[in-house]
Image (cartoon, rainbow, N blue to C red; front, side):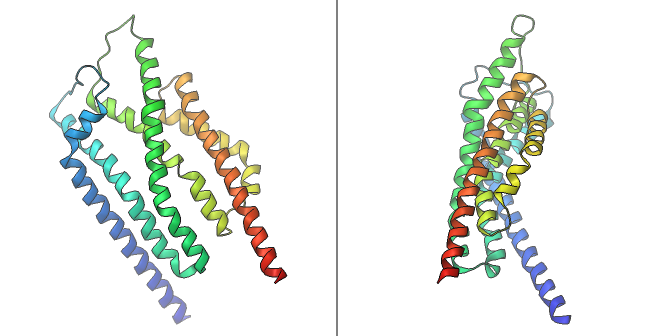
Length: 243
């Protein structure tokens, strides 16, 4: 009993260390983001003709924090994945360790790909639609705060969603997730994804649809890839039993 308590304390200390390292990495990347906020702003605004409005000094600070947070989040993803791998490493078999380690760079690349997809494909189409919707009736001016809040709400969920296939494959390889069980919950997953799309997109049908459809496609891709991993794992187990 005492040994179990000591092991639990050691695991909690290890978890605490991993969380602290991840938090420190976020702060460092956040500071880097603050240093390059102007460059990030100019890049994001290169296709926008005109300047955004601010309604007060605090809005400027908020924009700096919003843009720095994007860099901090993107930079922290591989660090967080590395810390998770170090935490679970003792419980993994050698082949599982190699597999999990190979997923770390892929997680970062998929996150960037999701952000890029949201920024270059979803965001401009929704923004163009909403701008044209009121073009004949009103003058369109955006505040910097609302513009970047809208941008982050559209793009960040895709960065996270693009990692779902890899996460599903990894959890399946560990035997934690059964893709056939997940597939049976498809209608509930669709419902949750539609709710998420409704919450993060503007309050009109086209925007909801533009966000919901890619999220559902990502879910289906995740299930399909997870099934492939599941079948490969079953074959490996049968081969080991035969020998």
